[in-house]
Image: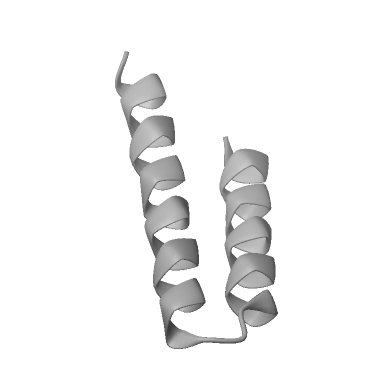
Length: 45
């Protein structure tokens, strides 16, 4: 479980650092949020 969260945090960091615009950052944050939501639903089930 901890490895999954660490990987998710690393991916989110890469996405956020790779954006060149605010719009791109918003999309990246949204994608990271969706991934966190999906992971939490998997854990709950």
